[in-house]
Image (cartoon, rainbow, N blue to C red; front, side):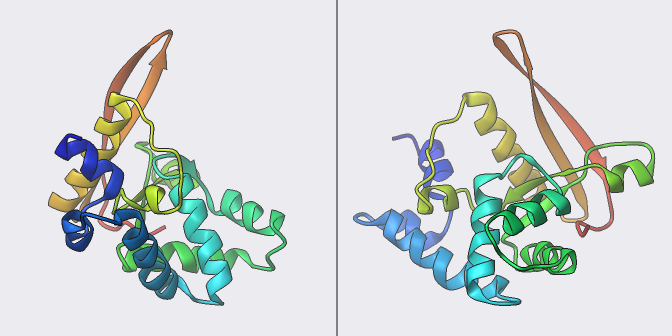
Length: 181
């Protein structure tokens, strides 16, 4: 397996990179002990559902309402304020961050759904999500994670646009002073 593909599948935690036998088990333990504990505002069950939702939707458009409706659909009694706090906490703990779609109008930018990115690409593997994505999706996700590592006060969004059978990448670059909602 190429090193890039291995990084995208198992992430960049040093212990996971060096692990020879059970990378997935170690990723699961990180997810359960670190992410769930860091996001536990109300209780760990809500934090786990929220984190799983974020991981399964990373690099996709999400909104507070979509997340709220997902949790309510599972029978979780949670308010919009709690969902907002979970997103803020996810950003503060370097688990995930939101990227605004570029718009000249700040009000449109704030109102539009945002793309969610997770900081370690191994979490989908830890949650047994299928690891199969096109080369352009590799590029999209890796570019966003890499650029946000280098430019902490800027946000870079990469989007993939499907046109017939070919994938064309377009890079939308937007600037913001804060990655909060």
